[in-house]
Image (cartoon, rainbow, N blue to C red; front, side):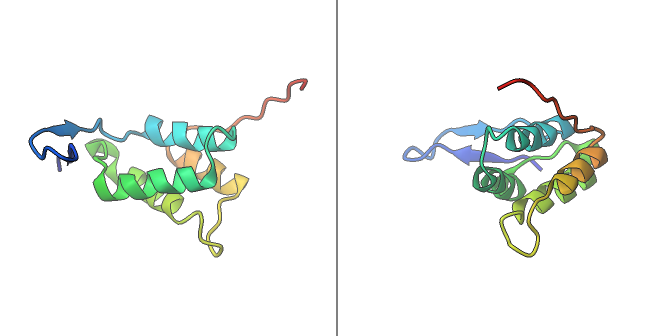
Length: 103
């Protein structure tokens, strides 16, 4: 499945997206845990990835499950806890670590 976007206004050119990999999803979760992006930004990315993203073929199952889970994290019933992030990272082949540093 190849996905691309039309450049607004011209409808002549397309921009291809790089495939979403385990590293891509792990980086997004890490950015959220570091407070580099908000929950709303994480959810927005996940929703867009589910609609228009191209998942790496060899990992499409685990990637689509993880991204779908992130896409509903702003719904009160689902939420997104530290434990949820740890589990998602584990499923992607990563582990979360906490570093305590002087402020």
